[in-house]
Length: 327
Image: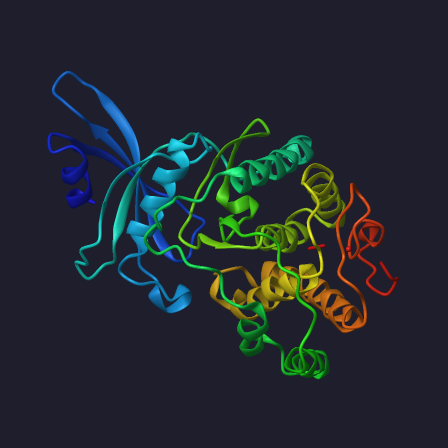
């Protein structure tokens, strides 16, 4: 932390340190700084990536996050402004220093609908941002879900059946690539009275199908706020987005839910919370698995207004047994 502050502002002194909770792959600390002898103060966030095992990070992860935030800040997107970074590894992991933004990841019941609407609106803003003409360091196409899912499938009847269908080949129809957050859920969104003030934690940013961020949000929302919140989020997204091909939605649903199930024990949840999340995520996974099987014999799907396949009509309860939408 001392090194980071010295790089940002050599005259600054650290006068306060507060550890922030929520993440599992990085140390995140709020620093209160005195910038000069006249009493000028500033709050910043020190973020140090430390868990290479869980997220398979390299020493360039901080540079990647810095570059993404810098690109988005210049585009006027609601993200923290990056202030300094270092790729040198002192044995504790690469770090970056960020602007402090006042807000909370929690939404009170009165603000849930407004907050979720704001999350959808942010996705539309993000997906409209032009990809840089030069490659951002560390930003790569997201992995192929057909291959990446397999090690995470449960060793049971559903998992084995799904693996067989994937091995036999499924219909794919990807959408045009956009910049992805990669871990888009309420825990990475700062709100103030229902307004979205910033989206944080861009270490998993990638380039890929816009359905990826949507699938991530849906899996997390069903655990945090229930089916009604998932339905509202989905309807708003599909109502505002230019038509997207939804053929790959069930695949991305499985990609997100299966990987979550395989890693959930590492998240530091209480036994009660893990059991609750695991059940909701497993139910979501099973419905998506059913859809993958049935989609093998269907044509490509396009979302039109609020009548997509695996979601809009069936999206009322995500009953994937009735034919006809997303994730």
